[in-house]
Length: 56
Image (tube, rainbow, N blue to C red; front, top):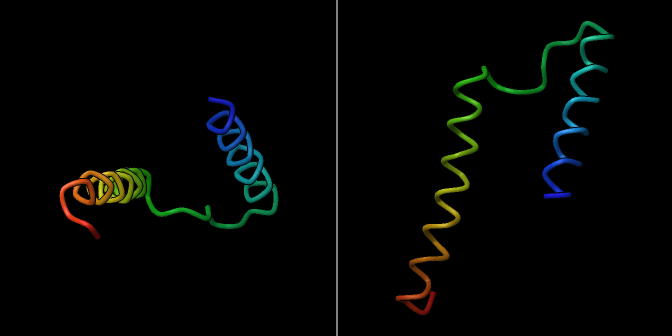
């Protein structure tokens, strides 16, 4: 949980800095970015799960 809070705080601060300097946000559009992150996480977990069945 501590890691999640630190990551959220870091992202918030980076967002503030980018907004202050009027730079474009360093992330894809909101829903597409969230979907991509979820896809990466699920792919990683699927590999871990499958590696239990196969010696990868």
